[in-house]
Amino acid sequence: MKESFDIFLAVAQAEIKESIRARWFFLYSFIFGGAVVLLFALGITESQVLGFTGLSKLLVTYLQLCIAILPIFVLITTVRAVVGDRESNVLEYFLSMPISLGAYFWGKLAAKFLIVFLPVLVTLLGAAGWGMIRSFEIPWRLVGYYILLLGTLAWCFLGIGMFISSWVRKQEWALGLAFLTWLVLLIFIDIIMIGVMLQNQFEEKLIIGISLLNPLQAFRTGAILLFDPELSSIGPASYVILDSLGSQGFLAFSIFYPLALGWIFSWGGYIVFKRGDLV
Amino acid sequence: MRELGKKTLKNEAIIQLQQVGKKFSRHAVLDKVDLTIVQGDRIALIGQNGAGKTTLIRTLLGQYHHEGQVVVAGAHPRKNRVEVLQHIGFVPQHSPPIQMSVHELLQFSAKLNQYSNVSKISQVAEDLGLDVGEHGKKPFLKLSGGMKQKLLIALALAKEPSILIMDEPAANLDPEGRKAFFLRLSQIQEQTTMILSSHRVDELLPLINRIIELDCGKIVLDEASGEHSLAGKMLSCRVKPANATEGIHKLLNEWKFEQSSDGTFYEGQIIDADRLRFLNAISHFANHISELNIT
Image (tube, rainbow over all chains, first blue to last red):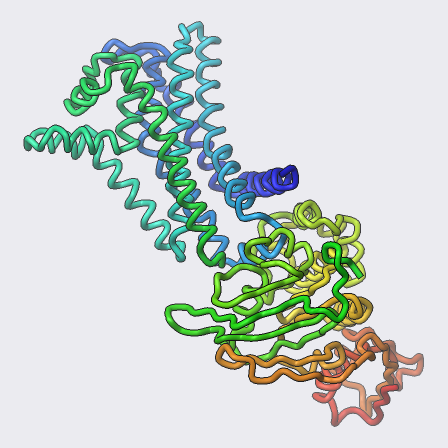
């Protein structure tokens, strides 16, 4: 057991080093870190929209940015993890070493999670720290909840990415499928497709079902719910969801659903990886 | 000899394949292969492209699902992969584009392989002519083809594997590297079962004692090639050019030959396993050589 854990750590360590070496990591960190710097620089904390000011306003805006770009960044960087190694024969070589398949898969996944989540975490904590220096009132509950939300969202899309990566045999297919997944999920959030469905009087259960199934919708609604309990700033679909689950219930759902979805896809990916030809 | 579990397997089957089949899109790449390999077998696995050599190797490494039964070192290579792969040293035909630095790769491999460590790998690499200290910080990817091959061979040999599987292992090595490589193989041939895949069996003849040829996924030839215990023997060689050409000088320099003080002849040593390759290389200058002695 200890040996397996050591191998898991060795794989994770190697993956982290490789990701740090790669340019995308710096681009990724720059975009997510730079977004907050830019929001501060633009004076977003001074503006007042829908009654939100200070750090809350910045966090709300930052989360709106994250909903669009975090999933696609996570997917793009993850979907090549297995299929890319397979195509380049790196997998053939590494898996000729005494590495258990579990240690290899989960080691890679854990490392990728750290790599995608760490810049976001540092950014949020950095924003809170900067807010303290600027003597803003720090909404710690909001900051904590947003960290959880972003963590579970990253985990969810990491699981989806690893599943796709284990399942398909060509990198182009993996990238195409990842992009398609992101696009479909993005379309089915309240401001786009669900709004249209409501306007066209689709059945309520269908709309609720689609909304609940979409981790992006759960993230978006959960993110706004904390400072806008009435959801006045969001489209009509979220009212329907809120009526079904309640405020606290939905907050819990928006954390646990993406988390569960991430686990389901990760396990699915692992099973596909383990049961198929490795190379 | 390293023991496989509690049992030493000298002259016992270390690899056994029974009715092993593998299909890709309904096309049989391995077709009901039966094969027994015993400890001490040194096999040249030959066959044309698409004959099934790589598929067979990957099956032995537990990387493919297959029909039939495969037992390697007493266990199934897929179900007991960690246990089985501790006994196997593998060198792929094409060096994978690994991003890790040389030093990181050494540490990674040493962590995973029970019998390996960084200093042992460095020593084997140095024997092959690769200074790991000098190239430690370079990404593996940025090394030359020959350096990559030397490092992969060093990683495999430092494990002191019971089974050595190599796919065209000497293809990218320079003459010095090849000499060290063949010498090393000859030193471990008693305690190591070798499967050496190659297009050119003549190069492997001094090392091997069995030839297996695959064609369309079937074994079409499986015979003993006779014991050639001369694989590690060094041969003295003297070349006297009829006229000095830049080509001969360059070639013999590559093979680390030394020119006599009066400049009339060259002397050097080649390893027996490399004799054919040397003769083939020097035959291009046959018209310019007046004397050639190999003893």
